[in-house]
Image 1 (cartoon, helix red, strand yellow):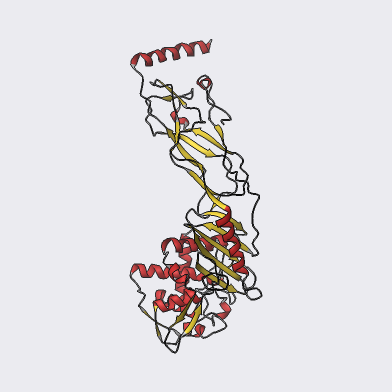
Image 2 (cartoon, rainbow, N blue to C red):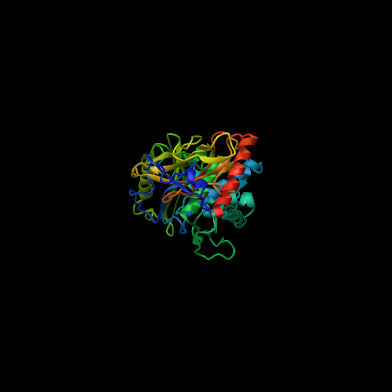
Length: 440
């Protein structure tokens, strides 16, 4: 129902700004009384296709990201493969630094030989499946010559994505104290990588968007590194939500875990169900040792919430005549007015638990197209944009990398041809004498 209709009286008195609030019934309101609490220092849930945030908790504060850092290494590696600078069969020689880190079995590692050679694919799989730190450093050194130079590239990359609140000192996400003195220039001995949940979610979204083939490897539950050699080691994926592992969940196929004393247990997860993909982040979900399942249990809550309690809802249909908006008056036309129609749909994910209250919209015409009496001048061509339909209340609608769309263009539904000479002349006469009458 229209709260305020535009009538022919507007021809006599027109305000400087026109607004027509409309209440669309049968649509959910944005106020959400149902939320979830995640047992973690920070958490985030994002719809991959739209970037709409379905849940956030302390997602703007930088916290330790641990081995989730390695998603940036993966992205740059894929860039190098795509550019033809490397192939999966390219051989990498292991430096003393990469070797020394690979021999620390208190960390996640596969055994590497100093001066030995390994293919890019072997090292990548060790990174993606087993979070192998020595393998990560070896790839970084192969690509940029040194880990420090690779860190510079990582920093430039995240800044190009609009991530400003971050600290990146190494490629592994380890605390600097584990790196045997191989620190980024000027960094503290105990420095560690950090980023807000929204920042690391952007990293994951970019990786999935540009290089979805990462899921082919991140979804492997178990694989043997260098099977059939003396270096063979079983790599069980640290993502326990994959098929056959302790917290198996259908649809989960990535993406990256991480654990340090500073960061606690972290996990960037992704899953697809019925064509919808979600990306989740939990940070500081316990310490990763006392309750090693906590990050996966909390991620499962996020996926249950996202897949089960949100529905993609069309708030306003595209290419439909707005029956509840009074047509705009047309001067000197064969028709007295012109109906209005939407040019595109306005759609969001909405929790299915929200009240079925009315949502308020406002139609705002383009004032530059109207005369002082609020009329359009004929002729009017169908499809001409005449104004906007604006959502009044956007509370609870947020997007990871952009502002929520809160308006859609509104166009003329039909064409209105200009009237003949005598009609136009008659209107001029009426306007003239009407203006004289108004003066006295």
